Image (cartoon, rainbow, N blue to C red; front, side, top):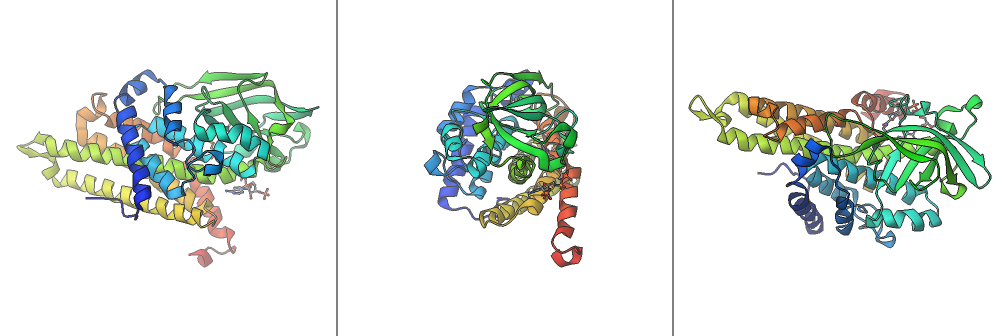
Length: 394
Ligand code: CAA
């Protein structure tokens, strides 16, 4: 039985298998413990790097694997099935900082920052949100003021995944004057490294799920960023962040599908084994219907995501299908893990079995890289964007 309806070439299947083997050997034995201890294993960065999993979308000329989007998402799903915390690290790194430098970086920035990111010598992070600027990302107030050959940044970035261990961070800050804000148009992107004077890792969040992925605040206290580290054009940072999040949301959708698939796989095995009223609970229609819905939702989410990957690789805009993919996949992750806990009953509510962790991990996929409500906003705006009339796009 397979729910994988996308044709994969033999090369794509090889990468999928390599990611699966890695996840089973290097992650599966430790996932539960890392979750309990909220522990991030730094050695993973090098191991992922050696396999090329931190440079999946970077061309070979810059030391990456140069994969297409579908192959990247298929590999990411294999990691997420086993460890969603590691999956978000891999997704953010591949989709956001590396892609931003690849797309908008200067030749010098690519040499200096993209190569080490692609080789896995440095981990990447993305710093857009702030304590008072979450869904309303354009409300960010971190200020960047030019001072000779530097920009001086002041402010606090929030919810930064992998922020404790990141060697390269793309941070968004206002380069318009505080008394003369131009909203999204006054925001620029900077390449920040932790050795820059004025950089500090702030509060580490104590999270419900994805506990092995460190999420922190980053405090910029007169942070001096060389002028050469402005990414792309001044004032274009918000647009860069939004375009990058279109790609990031594909990674989060793959992560959510991995979580849902894990919930389904564990539920299928448990329901076949667990006996009540003299028969396996898989023989009850109430359980069969849950399993059927979980399988249908995984297959539908995956099909939409893979179709979106093809749209992206054709070079067409993905804002609409990426928002749809992320929305559908995260709802699938949440419903599948909820039903998995139900199928396991009391055993689903305790830490002896993995489904309670999956349930906790699933929730954030409905929150980060744009909440489900924001995905609906993006979808609704896109429906009218083409022609001003919704019927034309349908
Ligand atoms: N592609 C290209 N440009 C885009 C764009 C896109 N997808 N979305 C917006 N823009 C451009 C617009 O065209 C507009 O440009 P002009 O000013 O030139 O016209 C500009 O950006 C402003 O756009 P909006 O007017 O639509 O801006 P808005 O303030 O209404 O915000 C929003 C739109 C969709 C709500 C946006 O704020 C948003 O996506 N919010 C959610 C933020 C988010 O996803 N945060 C995730 C943080 S990262 C994370 O979670 C990290 C992690 O580590 C896992």
